[in-house]
Amino acid sequence: MAEQKKGKISRVAGPVVTAEGISPRMYDVVLVSNLKLMGEVIKLVGNKVVIQVYEDTSGIRPGEEVVDTGAPLQVELGPGLLSSVYDGVQRPLPVLREKQGDFVSRGVTAPGLDKSKKWIFTPTAKKGDSLQGGAIIGEVPEGNIVHKVLLPPNIRGTVKSISSGSFTVEDVIGELDTGHKIKMTQSWPVRQARPYVDKLLPDIPLVTGQRVLDMLFPLAKGGTAAIPGGFGTGKTVTSQQLSKWSDAQIVVYVGCGERGNEMTEVLTTFPELEDPKSGKPLMGRTVLVANTSNMPVAAREASVYTGITIAEYYRDMGYDVSLMADSTSRWAEAMREISSRLEEMPGEEGYPAYLASRLSEFYERCGRVTTNSGKIGSISVIGAVSPSGGDFSEPVTQNTLRIVKVFWALDSKLRERRHFPAVNWLTSYSLYSPMLEEWYSKNVAEDWSALRLWAMETLQKESELQEIVQLVGSDALPEEQRLTLEVARMIREFFLQQSAYHPVDTYSPLRRQYEYMSAIRKYSELAKKAVSLEVPIDKLVALPSRVSLGKLKFEETIDKDIKNVTAAMEKEFSALGV
Image 1 (cartoon, one colour):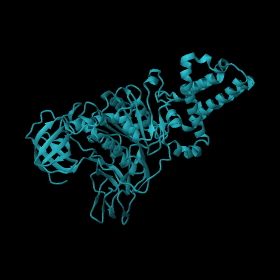
Image 2 (spheres, helix red, strand yellow):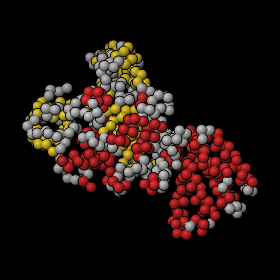
Image 3 (cartoon, rainbow, N blue to C red):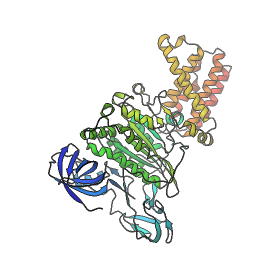
Image 4 (cartoon, rainbow, N blue to C red):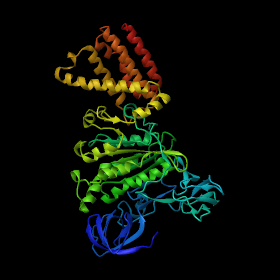
């Protein structure tokens, strides 16, 4: 660390403090006042330094001391990240609680990693190996995965010595010919993206087990998605479902400015949830960054960078990481508050003019890449957006939509009808669908894309017919159109509705999704023939197999039952002369 220089506070405006007498670089971390509050340099004007402080500045006065640490805001990376709960600047909250109790005092800090815990290190590199930055040098069992110990990206050299055994993260486990001492821990500036070799095409889906997302609006590994929705539409539950069921090995959950009770739910349920892949607790592959709405606003701005840097570290090991940012609206509000205190020229609705570039900078750090260690890893970013009053035309939602490729629009009207997940199938979209068609046809079924297209067209036709129904009623429609409404209702109620709290319905594998939707399409095709033979619609709706199809998703033997119900359906239609 560089030599520390001292200056004095000249002005205090909430979390924004102006100091004189030091000459730091942009984004250097400084310690403010006698309480040693952590802050970050965000503006340099002549001999004045503007600092955003990550803690409450009540009682701070001009004339108090400011110390420049000479280093930017960094996170500690190494074994021990998984199962951790951090605040926005990587202070471990359980450790602070042990020191202080439930209410943490200002100026209290603790290292991001436990420096006393020992880890069993097994080297994969050996003496004489020539290593590039980011190379894997060994392995450590951690949580539900194998933690691959990496050489820092900016270090290279030949291995002079390396040891195996039980070490803390601070112990020296080897040495390079350059004199660099190898440790299991490394630091990285949060605002700087970690390097990689090559970015790959997003042509593999992130399987979520949520039917409306996988079938209609798929997300690719390394892709970006936005979940905008008004209050109570299910953003947090959807994020939690994706954390539990998506086929990513690591989950980084950033609660950015959310209410404390929502983060409490995450903190209490995640340790109890079972990881479906390993049978161990879900927290064993999760890192939580909790920055609730009652915490200082400046740290909220840093929390998403802390989360994405941790995600990049696990990506560099060759893992698929999914990052939930809940919610980017609160992050943007923090930027707006800091910007107004800096007296910057406001943009639309008071947000800073650089809102779009900051959002782009954040989402740009996701992707599926070839890492410096030669492995393939990915970061998929799902950002929840909380537009005021559910207004999707506000700046954060609109700027997010310009960047992301998947839009899962949560609808308050669907919530009122108790339709969950409340994803509106008419306004949502996925731009990854064409790139993922080949994967689905090879790994699930050749006609997956055709089935998806049929479902979307049916729902679209229903939307067009609803306008007529509201005027004259469904009885005035021709039989074919009444059938379209019935089939669309089956798609909505049987397939798209999914209970997050039901032990069977909470997760639906791709093959099951395909067979379930195929059974609905089979009913549609047979019913069309029946209608052409003038069989009444009411008779078709009352068929036992159609009723059974609706109950299937809650049955433990659903995979076998779909085939039985389809066979029964064919017999019933055969009895009707089809």
